[in-house]
Amino acid sequence: MKKDIKKIVLAYSGGLDTSIILKWLKQKYNAEIIAYVADVGQDDDFTKVKEKALATGASKVYIEDLKDEFVREYIYPVIKANAQYESRYLLGTAIARPIIAKRQAEIAKKEKADAVSHGATGKGNDQVRFELTFKALAPELLIIAPWREWEFKGREDLINFAKKHDIPIPVTKEKPYSSDMNLFHISFESGVLEDPWNEPKDDMFVMTTSPENAPDKSEYIEIDFEKGEPVKINGKKMAPVELMSELNKIGGKHGIGRVDMVENRLVGIKNRGVYETPGGTILMNAHRDLEALTVDRDTMHYKDMIAVRYAELVYYGKWFTPLKDAFDAFIKETQEYVTGTVRVKLYKGNAMPVGRKSPHSLYDPKLATFEEEHIYNQKDAEGFINLFGLQMKYGHKKKK
Image (cartoon, rainbow, N blue to C red; front, side, top):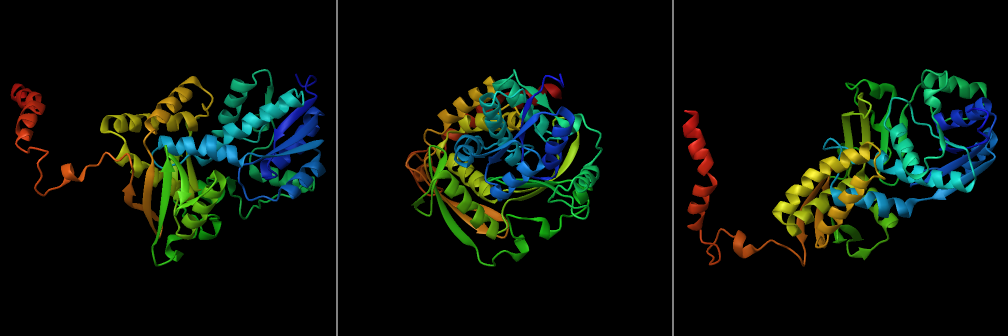
């Protein structure tokens, strides 16, 4: 198989792992290496990344701007689904992998490459996310996963390899965080974070200020939604990328969206991850609040059940599956009347919806009031309770 591989498309970021992988692939397979960089909103100098890839041995470098598609087709569906893995993780890395792998497969086909390669480790979730996408969209391509092949045992070995081959890297033994950033979030793991008792140092965070140092005065913003998708901030219509960037800026200022958790990886390992998702946290809270106003109870409760399974599908890398498509179809139907405005109060790490309105509101003040009204007859409740509690009443008697 090694002899048959003449051209490889590598998902390249210029970070520690993929910098080493590019050089290693060149040595191991003696093949042409095409570096592919996906711009999903990370804070990188892509000119320097391209120069580094070429200097390290790439024959060609693709820099692909995927930000708009990322927000429209990946971030917004997760928001509309209210999907959070294990009730806390907003899936920032998980939703970026399928769009990155999808474009990688397209480039591989265009270049008539024999194989694709990625920098995911053999312990993590990303290897599954990349490779399930390849299998779904380009099953003919061979997949090379260096972390499952090479002799390196850990990141210290990679750092030493980089020094030996004069490859500049953004990681040191003193600060060996592994981070992944996109327009939706940034994640941190590895290094001192591997001990779940260690609190992250504040200088590690990138997108958010600490809640302690956030403004002492709260800030109110209004977000307009149309069919479940955000379209305006404070009355100003914004394109998806601009809207996410603005919410990240506002939320970051108020220390919103930090999560420190131990999660269950797909492979069965528990992993400690630290995340920053400022704009996404605001959107998730606001969207869920608007749904409470506009979606009926039975549909909302069923959708809540789907949200758990939806989050698992995304976390497990099953983006391009029939079940995911079916869930999206159901969710799209539920969003038909999720149009309106939510007012959110931002204060020291909290994004609290404090006002909501919609032309499709199911809330009727005449029914909800505790004052006198002539629609709801409270006497009717007695018969309802008697019937609703019938099996409890007689079931309890039998137990005695």
